Amino acid sequence: MLVIAPINTGLKRLAESLGNEQMAENSNAGGEVVAYPATQGFHQNGDVERRLAAILAADVEGYSRLMGSDEGGTVDTLKRCRQVIDNLISRYHGHFVGSAGDSVLAEFASAIDAVKCAYEMQQELWVINADLPMNRRMLFRIGVNLGDIMISKSDIFGDGVNIAARIEGLAEGGGVTISRSVYDQIKNKLEYVFDNIGQHLVKNIDEPVEVYRMRMTPDDLPTVQFNPKKRTAILSAFAGMAALLVVQIAGYAVWTNFIAEMEEHVNALGLRPVQLTNAQKKRLAISSLPQKLRPGTTFQQCADCPSMVVVPSGSYIMGSPDDEVGRHPKEIEGPQHRVTIARTFAVGQFEITFREWDSCVAAGGCKQNPQDRGWGRGNRPVMYVSWFDIQQYLQWMGNLTGQEYRLLTEAEWEFVSRAGSTTPFWWGNKVGVDKANCLGCGENFNGAMTVPTGSMPQNPFGLYDTHGNVYEWVQDCWNGSYAGAPHDGSAWVNGDCSLRVLRGGSWGKQFKDIRSARRIKSPPTLRSGKRGFRVAMTLPLK
Image (tube, rainbow, N blue to C red; front, side, top):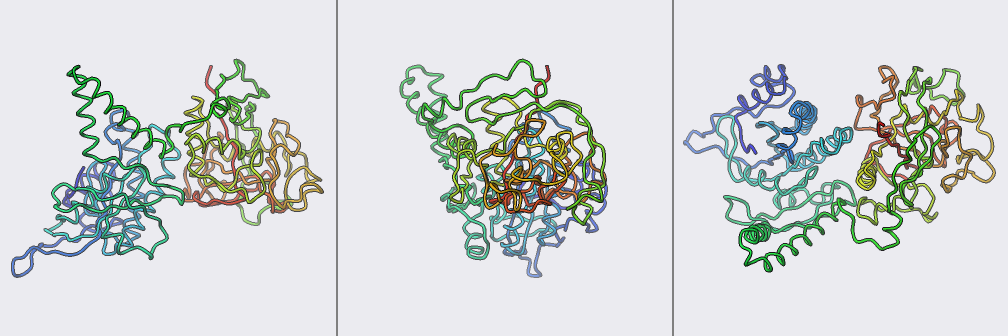
């Protein structure tokens, strides 16, 4: 990991490696990235110039693995990530000091700006990673320290830099750590939540450094912290066990203790199931997919897995005509365009329920334990889950079943909602009575709260509740119109990816808001009592 680098050579080297000629040309003349100001680094009396500064250090977790498996794809992803990082450093008044490979070093005059920049980096990088397979995601670790730095021409060095680089290594992939010096400056001034993860010895620093971990979401609880000395001793004992059979019993005992600590750590991250009851295990027992997956085939891989139905391939006109009753006054539902879905795929017959989500929480796969507003859980659609929360559920389902569960793309969602229709609702032009859960939509379902999934008639594709009940998150980034939208049903990954799309309307909304063409935008971090989701599955090729 790079700690310091000359701005003129380091920035040029990075720019050239990423193919950014404009950045290379501007490395001496300013530009979008604010370069670290060159200075002689000495006062008139010959002393090295010093100052107090907030230092942000970042690198990629598992970068060598990513490069080893797909060098070209890793460089492409790094380009996208660096564009986000560079823009945010500039936005928060930072100075880019240097970078090589996967590492970044920046200096800020304000600790508050540095921490806000670090948080926004991780949020925006999440958007990039959400569109990548799990094994190709580029997770940055970020450390921020406030300390004394020394300046020599275009370089900075000293304890302030060293500590930032070291505590960055204590962050999880996708996480942020800060030193006590930073925490003292920002506490009670920012809305972020931090957990004290103890004092840590830092190389070349005499005194231990007290480190805090930022919660990236409100329920992002701290993981178990390993003691580095303890880990080294345990691993050494295990190596000795392999070489010297005479210490096998003692070595086994130490290794067992290490495994127990590792499991506790992994459970806290939601990467491995916690201890389940026999009843829970039975409900998660996986069955194989049907041999023939034709349109209309339904299947459910476990008792607490979503019930899926195979939908046909096909073509349809996406968006609404100008004269559709209730059409949004802006052009967000147009221009209409033809979309062709070339392959069959599977879709959840129902919105994901509390029962299904709670099973993920119980198994350690999902961290968010959403409230139900006192309406009940069970078969009611889960709510108060963000787009980011849903990624944990999808990962857990994939690990559990070995299949690719995912969010629908926006084009897929409208295709299955319409189910062959061209009208505002799959059943016709008017909302009718008790066909959807929204304001004024019926006698029994008046839109005052959610209702159990499957309470309404199913559409011709075998789906329930595509109109009303809860909004459904989809994969796509937000775009204000369909100009330039994909025509093959794929997710639109360009546009404003700090916002994601929701479809279908919800309880408490009027009929015009639950039409097949209606679309809204939302930050992917938002949790709401009107937002849930439905899953899709990419079917294996035969």
